[in-house]
Length: 289
Image (cartoon, rainbow, N blue to C red; front, side, top):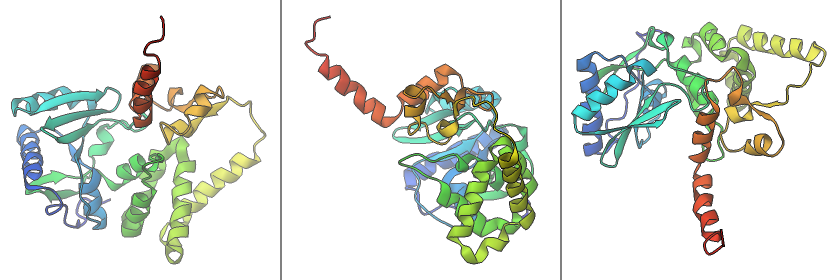
C-alpha cells in the first residue's frame, strides 16, 4: 500500500484524557529517540477503515532487538515495563493504563522484521506524527486470531472492503506463504459477506489460491504427520487435540518460532486455565500428602 494513501482520522475522542496523555507522551519519547516503531491495533484499523472504537491499549510493533532500549526509555518516564510473554509481547504500565509492545504474534508466526518497516503510511496519532503498520502485515496478524472469545475475521473483511484495490496482493500472498488456506478462507468469507463486491478481490489472486487447492487435492495422500495446526488459530480450542488425542502442536513445528516453554507459558495464561487452578488447589486442601 502506498505511503501517500490518505488515512481516515484516528482515535482522538475515543480515549480518556489521562490515557491519551500517556499514549501521547510515549509516542513522543520514541519519536524523539529515533526508535523505529509502528502503530497498529485499533488506531491503525481506524486509519484504514474509518471504524472508530474505544480501545483499552495502544499497540506498537517493534523489532525484538529494540525491546531493551524501548523498555529503558519507558522506565525513565517512571512507567513500569514488563516482558509479559517472551516469545511475542511486552507491556508498559502507567497505573492501570498500558501499552503493548509487539515483536511477534502469539502463535509465533509473524515476527516483526525489517520488511514491516517498508513504505509505511504516516498518520497523526494523538497529535504525534507516526508511521502505521502496513495493512498487509495487519491482515496477516489478524488472520490467525480465531479464539472462542475473539475473532478478528470481521476486521479483515472491513480492511478488504475499504482497501481491496490498494492492497499489495503479491506481498499478501508471500506473507501467508504455506498458510495460504487461511487467506483463502478469509477471502471466501469476504465474498459471502459482500456478495456484490466479490469482484474487488483480483481474479488472479483467487485463481492462484484455487489452483493451489486443486493441485493439493490431486496429489496422492502423503504419510500423515499427525499435526494439528489449529493451535496456530486458537491457543485454547485445540488443546484437546494435542493434550488428549496425541496430535503434534502446530506451534512446535518449524513454521513457528515458539518453544515448548513458550507454549506452556501462553497456555497457562488462558483465563479459563487460571480460573481452574485455584479451584483445583481448593479441592486439595485438607487432603493428606
